[in-house]
Amino acid sequence: MPTPLVVSEVAKSFTMHLRDGITLPVVAGVSFSVKKGECVVLGGPSGVGKSSILKMLYGNYAVDAGQILIEHRGRLVDLASAAPRSVLEVRRDTLGYVSQFLRVVPRVSALDVVAEPLLARGVSHPEASEKASDLLAKLNLPRELWQLPPATFSGGEQQRVNIARGFITDHAVLLLDEPTASLDAQNRRVVVEMIAGKKAEGVALLGIFHDEEVRDAVADRILDVSAFSPRKAAA
Amino acid sequence: MTTTPLLKVSDISKFYGGRIGCRNVSFELWPGEVLAIVGESGSGKTTLLSCLSTRLMPTSGVVEYHMRDGQYRDLARMGEAERRFLMRTDWGFVHQNPADGLRMTVSAGANVGERLMAVGDRHYGQIRATATDWLRRVEIEEDRIDDQPRAFSGGMRQRLQIARNLVTSPRLVFMDEPTGGLDVSVQARLLDLVRGLVHDLGLSAIIVTHDLAVARLLSHRMMVMKDGVVIEEGLTDRVLDDPREPYTQLLVSSILQV
Image (cartoon, rainbow over the protein chains, first blue to last red):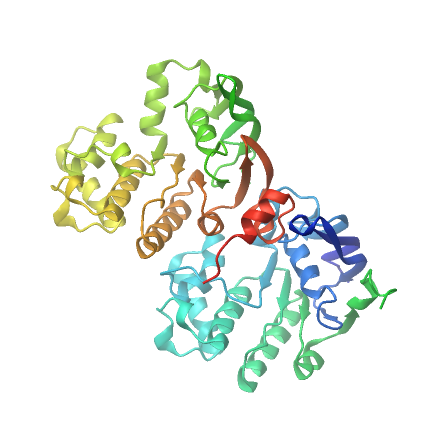
């Protein structure tokens, strides 16, 4: 089975210069891989470094040591050391991310927020809008909200916009940071179905799910992040 | 993927007598890339922008630009006429104060049309039609085309300045605090507009700003300057979410949350 994502010996700490330069270790020796069509769930208590791992994978956090190899257009890119423009290219074509919170841009409608990743890849405006509409309809976002900027939406509505935006492309690797945290049961089921659909398409998924029901429904494997915690000896 | 940078900057320094404007700055800018230069007042960001855009001669270092003919040219070795032509056609420069980039006593239409005439357009009807189209794109009512920018609000002036700069389809636009003097609702409109235009036209841009939210919204990559030196650079998300240098951490932690 092809493995589009391989993480090996990754370590991360924060140095807080504003607090006398104290160093906070986050994770060390993180090694795992995700196969095509597999959904790996990061487990462990809050603060153990689950979100930090996703952020390193997406390039939002720098990596102190190790490699993050992703298969991008038939070659391997090490995201831990790649130049900014390579990271952006990988994000555009290969690596998707559904964050916990939507970063709202003033004046941009929900529909355009969702369509944007397709437009960035050169898909025509009508085609991208149509696909965005399909996804928003599937996620039961009221139609009268589609043309409004999501800044005033409720938490659950914003999260559904965010999910639609993350799922609209055919990225081969998808990172999910608690995509169902503020959804009701009906919409949670929709997201579980959508994740199953991605798996069937051969997408490699890596996610954080605190909701047990969702986790049991989507996870092929649970990776306990506390094993990578540099503080575990002290705990 | 394009394999050649649009701008190659090697070891640029600018001294004002014994004072440092900026020191040993090197980077490459790629087509379609938006670079934000951030830092506090006096950190050298505007000096750097002026050196890149040939408004100031650097004390040392080389800036090379990838011309439309595929050749790299050292900007310092270009003749004055050639450099001016480049600035009027292939480049844009958006000033913080629109009055510095506009002719305040000629009409809005003429402000946009002047750049077209610089690239050889002579047909009055066509120039006017293009100017009208650009005013629409920057959300200025068509019936204001014959008004002078003196009669425009600050936000309208800034949008007009952007239209004037983009009408010749430049490949590189320099912006110095483009949202500096505007109130927040006007800022949001301008940012959304710039973001859309940069994307639709595939522009490269270098934006100087002290506003990290502007940098987050518009830029792909970021350089943080302090005392004339680039102290940290990288993907915009990375610099803002995981700042490494003490000064960058101070900047990021000083943002007010609303």
